[in-house]
Length: 182
Image 1 (cartoon, rainbow, N blue to C red):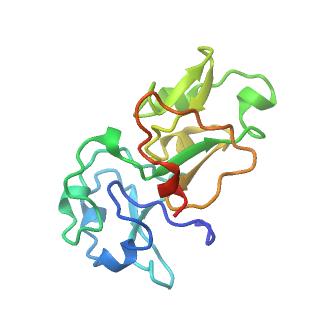
Image 2 (cartoon, rainbow, N blue to C red; image 1 turned 180 degrees about the horizontal axis):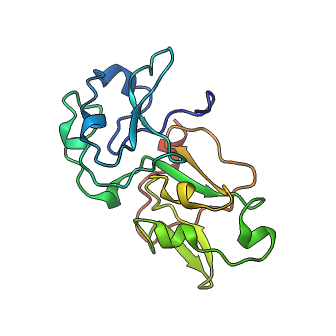
Image 3 (cartoon, rainbow, N blue to C red; image 1 turned 180 degrees about the vertical axis):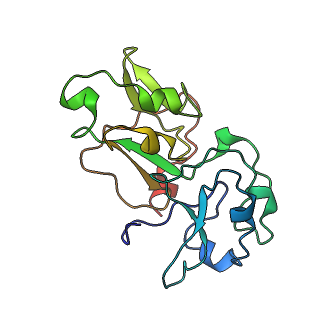
């Protein structure tokens, strides 16, 4: 885990500032996750033993089983629709993606996205482009054959320098800029 990047929290998480205070570290979300996507933060500090997702190892499959079991309100118990999830946002890195580096057409991220056609669209019918409807689940980062996608939690304060600009979705942005940059 990058010590400078905030943890990617499970679906329905409150703000990163509030999360370590609300989470009682019971581990119910970890036990409930049928895909082993949720892990507890190791080490020291305020986030120790709180849940997070490491997309490069096990992305969140948006099964939505973790929010209802959270007893403390660190995860929104009413969140059941994966289209309303905004854990973070994916960024395609122009300097690594086949579509930009060598002209090889690759649509792996589009094909495997649980919100295909909404969170990832095909520009000109060929080139994947992340939209503002991205849930931040990490599936695209996990399946990218060249590591050209990075997920940034909603609490992150930056965008990768080589990121392809995010396309604004037709529907309202689930992660407005003011939330992304508290």
